[in-house]
Length: 114
Length: 113
Image (cartoon, rainbow over the protein chains, first blue to last red):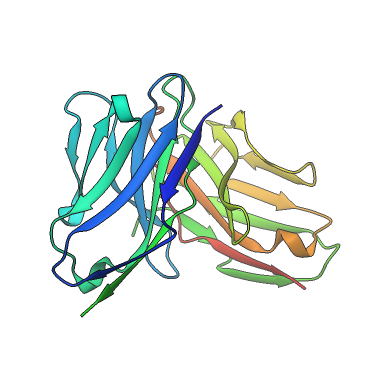
């Protein structure tokens, strides 16, 4: 069975500081990996994903994530936080041999302070 | 705008009642997924349909059912509602298979009183 763990339910960062959100997965076979963002009162939007190839993936809004198989991790980073980055972030996995259902982590709420 | 529409946006009903949530996928997407987001259980996969057929089932209660119609829109039916069914219900659509992006609708917020 798969599981997704996001370290920290709330993260507070200063504007301009590094954003680092941690995600670890548990799976016998590396799954497809995703980061989604949810702004207040909205649906989820894909930030980036890893399926195959280069392990450092770049997404929208300046975010990137690195797949590390040895650490079963897919941490999300952004070098410089903007006020508009305040949102909830979800790491998700999908088995490569499935029809694509997503299993989500518990989410990390990001607060950006001036 | 993801291109996925969900109606209604809000729904308030009483325990024991039945409701239907509707989802229209992006044009051309054959897969529709339903997810439930609640404070205590987070985001959970409920069920997936592909071109009218059920493909995968998750933590969906027996009181819940879904279907996908020939025009590819989908409905999630929730019956004998309980207070604990209060949640945000999202649908997402996808073209292709696993690994492709799922586009999420804005959700239907269900409140059971």
